[in-house]
Image (cartoon, protein in one colour):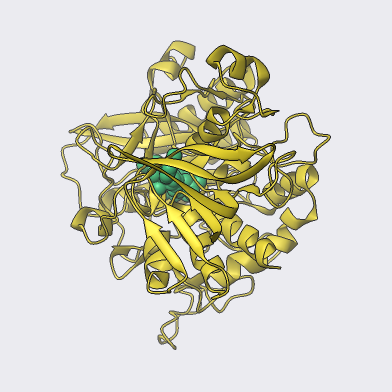
Length: 502
Ligand SMILES: Cc1cc2nc3c(=O)[nH]c(=O)nc-3n(C[C@H](O)[C@H](O)[C@H](O)COP(=O)(O)OP(=O)(O)OC[C@H]3O[C@@H](n4cnc5c(N)ncnc54)[C@H](O)[C@@H]3O)c2cc1C
């Protein structure tokens, strides 16, 4: 029998499978709903996000919410932005879930995972890990102009956005390439000649301080290729005799004996089957891990009753989730796109992130995204049917609170100032008309102690009240993260794998 069955070969599942199967005594089986499309040009090209209407590798939900449905999951189709959250987020996480998730505990995991080609030898960084991290050397004209405007507005350039809090920024000291690691380089920006922006006005409006700033985005990209977790973790482990990965196989339900999970039911085309395992780990992502629990009778009692699902264990699955709402500030631009990753620079101001996209998502319109990274409003995930092919209903409840709306209004006004492109009245209607998602949903199976009425899993991802079941993906993160979640997802999977083998 399989020792560990992993549901979903996405960002977390790939890392977990590789870490666990390193022990030859453990047989690891992975079931993935999507296909294995390892070598397609689109997937390897980090400039390309295969998320259009024609894409065949997506789960789609209301409100343009998508997830990757293929080996590699969302990490195989995302923007490659690989950035650690600030220490404050881990302070909040560990306050909810315990010291395993303090910044001091997770920093070594981040370091072990990375091979940072720019700052790997700096304190708080890593060299020789499986994930190559680099930053763009030749930004597009639009990225360059955005950065120059940040300089003109008085924002400092942060050379390394992944520098841990409390560590000095690496000093700009360019040297020869050594052992494949480029040493720190000077800022490539700073040239004047851009329209005036009044920094006092911006700082006053946002209460920003000078620890905020802009910088080159750390990217999981190597030699111009997207380096998602399938490429960095799963594929290199696939030759191991104790690891079996099966694609195009959707897990439809957990199999339980009482409150112990003994395996799963799955469907592959018209074929249906069961796989039994000592231990099952859900890595199906923030939507599908929650959906699978609910379909299996682990979820809010009223919801299970309304769906007619026999109740195994009442649990607040889907009752809390969070995401980063994003407002698109667009303006006409006749210049064609240059081939580039979607984001080369970002400007961070406390809980706001300004994203100057290199690609036009609407022809002729250039966009800067203004994302709220620490929203107060939280959402809910429910199911409308027990049919696994009917998408879950995710209600993000963006901008329910006035605080969130006010922050985004400030952020949009700042963006208009920064770009020198006035926007008229920014009222709630304008915000809603320009609102989108950052695709960073998390927290549907929150981590926390059993006494916490919102908690679904414990500090190692084990589902409270259920034996032999762990959730190890972005669903478990119990606080909003102030940065994109990919780096955290990978760290989380590695950390949970390490707890499992201890
Ligand atoms: C378009 C897009 C762009 C993004 N860009 C960035 C970015 O640049 N930087 C960043 O930090 N974050 C980004 N994100 C977010 C980030 O990619 C995800 O948060 C992260 O990959 C989540 O990892 P996960 O392991 O939780 O889920 P996923 O990577 O989504 O993996 C879940 C896997 O489980 C499989 N699965 C689901 N249900 C079942 C089932 N029932 N049976 C079998 N298999 C199943 C899925 O097919 C998938 O392969 C982006 C997300 C999207 C969608």
